[in-house]
Length: 259
Image (cartoon, rainbow, N blue to C red):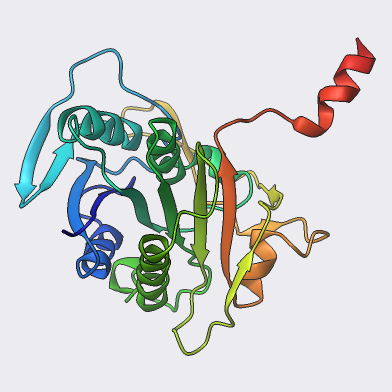
């Protein structure tokens, strides 16, 4: 009997990355998809508490929820999987990177963390885009390497075991390269992202002032060569273990002494 994988994303149920993810895994497992009705990028680990959520079927074993990625995982695990949990939850393939402090914004990573909190092993996978050609659309990208990496990683987990402890996930970022071009896989730390001030301020037709947050260039502090950003820059797939426990372990003794 095939294992079962729950897949989810934060780009919405109709995102190309989710379709590629499902196709990449179909030979390995039975796939159940629960994804947001609308794009919920940068929704982090938010959960909808102030209104009801509606789950609707849009394909075989595929459902939308009018909420966040965290909602999708929570509702799926406690409705579709009440009797038996899925063997794995995979979130992605995200359109864009989730490295450094962007991990804290990411609905993709949060969905995987939500699964881990409920005792289910999970992976978040993202496709880095940094060098799109003029007039090239992200939805036209083939996700060839990302498809291979998630297939091979999942197969390795099912053939052996999940490689890290409970309440921790694998965060995978894939460079914008073909399978024949990438140099391998590196196990990395989360790097330090540098953020700009891309805030656009305009007036709408009624004369009301509004602000629109833009996209920051993909830049980082390059002093740590073992981080996810550096691996991607050098043509490697980055895999970073992420924990839901956000305690700064290095500072515990320092804080005790400070008190």
